[in-house]
Image 1 (cartoon, one colour):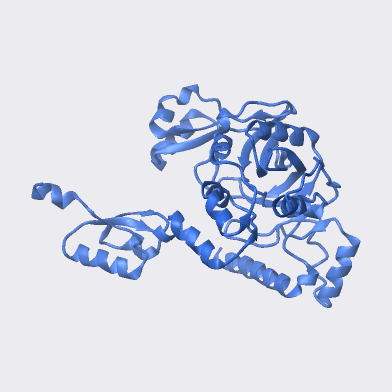
Image 2 (image 1 turned 45 degrees about the vertical axis):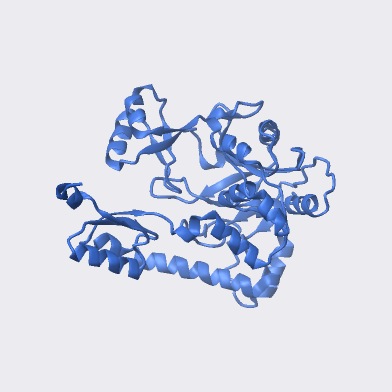
Length: 394
């Protein structure tokens, strides 16, 4: 290799956010070697360094190597009924099913094949009561070449909580050329308000039989940079039979096991469309529990007692839900009915909360339980601090 080519080839360093790795990058830069690399999170010193020519966000090796993660579980000594609550955990559990069983975990999760089919909902057929909003992943160049063939409006779903709607080919073309991502996940946009969004949560046993279900409607979602595409802030229990029955038919065809959340939206013509299928419990399964759906009890019985349960939907359609904790993705829905009247009653807090719960047995305030007062107060403080901090920054 000649010296001309060597001078153009950067030195790649992983974990540039680490002070020792960054010191190596500086040493290489002082020696006249161009440096590129990855950082997680993307720290300001990595972006501003004169020695780093290019940097990308990439998780640390210890966070993505399956063996390391598995070893942490083995060393934890935890044993019992394992409930995967996020997509990554469900996928990891399915892939390393034998390992989890060997360390004393009992669980139900769909197979890797079922999850792959659910992610690629372009391949999922319409069922009675539910249609499927077309979604596919395309390379940027292929998308640019066939933009005129696309049906608008559509959504780019490339980044968490940063979904974007595009109404015409011109605006999407400009975005792709400026964004310069290699590929994009796009989906047909279904017109309608937030209240037209609903989910079916279904639990399947080891024989791929639906045994418990729940449906609920969104009332508000977090507003992200590009619109109301964020996480659910408020919801209510509502029995929507076509959602439950359609979800059961769809998931049965996938030979499903364990939990699934089927996210849907109702179009102006009344048809329901599947937007996503998540291989886990929903983030607001707590709403289903408050409404009497009995999902967690059924899951526990299936995993710990190996019993046969008959299909039943036990919800009362009376509960509503407000998310309590402000995360980096959203702030609390302070104006929702479930919050009103509580923050003015801080004196005798525990007694008043108990009384409120007795008067409103179907109202769920996220992670707030007067019997768990210390933890509840800590969550409240975290929320208030987060909101105050964000308001100060703004």
